[in-house]
Amino acid sequence: MQIKEKLEVFRDFTLDVAKENSSQLTAQYEAVCRQELEEFRKNKQTEMEHRLQMEERSLRRQMNSKVSREMQRQKHILDECKRQWKEKLMQEIRLLLKEYQNTAAYQRFLIAKIGMAKKVAGQEPVIIYINVSDKEKKAELEKQTGVGLTVSKIDFGGGIRAVIESRNILIDESFLTRLEQEETYL
Image (cartoon, rainbow, N blue to C red; front, side, top):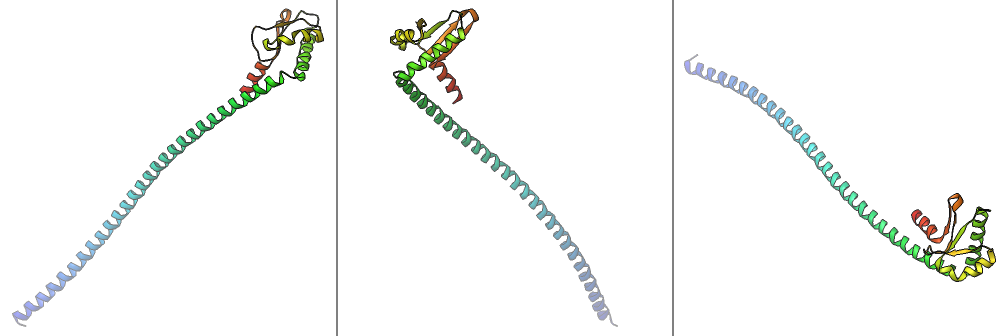
């Protein structure tokens, strides 16, 4: 074998070894790159999931805040509607009470309440008050019940109030008190 042939064999062998080493190094590099790429993808996927969760939490907070504000607004509207309804209802009731006070049924009601107060008092002295608006009915009521009545200086909307001082008892059958009680339940 000649030097040229030897050089040719040496060159081929060296090239083969270099190709083999190069293939191994390239395969190792590609494996490392694939691993790094996979880690990068996982990190990015985790980062995106985390970012998505944060954005979702933020959107939920915003949504809850908007829902809460809307609920408060709706509650305010409802409360205002209830207040207006209650006002209208109480006005209507007061109007109906005024009409009722001009009927014979109201006269019978007063007689019954005066009788009840008289019965509660028994033998004790009792002061029975009628409303200012009922002063023209005083004589007729006294005649029918046999009880002396006092016209109140305070307007209590109708009905009667009675005081049994010896027992510290106030009998309040006034429309004003009843309306206030009903208004608290509405």
